[in-house]
Amino acid sequence: MTAGPIENGRDARPQVGVLPMRRTPEGGTEVLLVTSRETRRWIIPKGWPMKGRKPFEAAAREAYEEAGILGHVGKRPIGFYLYEKRLKNRDAVLCQVTVFPLDVRKQLKKFPERGQREARWFSLSDAADAVIEAGLAGLIRAAGNRDPKKSKR
Image 1 (cartoon, one colour):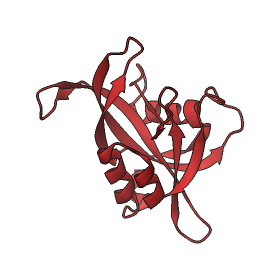
Image 2 (tube, one colour):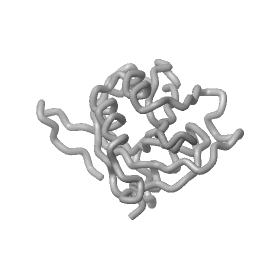
Image 3 (cartoon, rainbow, N blue to C red):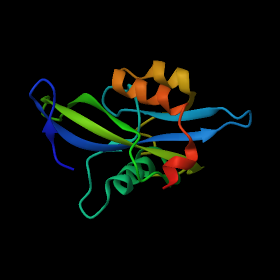
Image 4 (cartoon, rainbow, N blue to C red):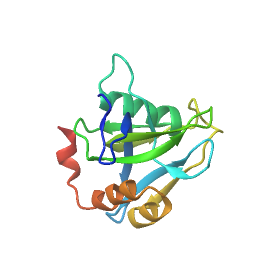
């Protein structure tokens, strides 16, 4: 994945992320969101691409590190969204996050970023309302319409 031109002419840095989902006993769908470490806003697990790993594998690794979740990650992205990432030096960079579906099978009690973030399960509509990035909210809302079997290819 390389950075590509965006509508306004700025290049976006690539990131990968997962939309962690599970079925409720009633047949609905829930989404797991985590808080960012700096601003504490609700986001999905995401990060930079990893050398030697396919994008969906790197996204699944981020899910483990940030939320302690394991499951089946789809190899095909369900979409992408843009956001401004604030770097440690206070500069902001535009990032394009490619999002893969993650069918959560297990949530671990111990994981690398435990204690640094909060994680919470939301209904699709509540999750879409909780995130501030419009593109991410749209992906979450659209997730209710997708067939989970299609993401397993």
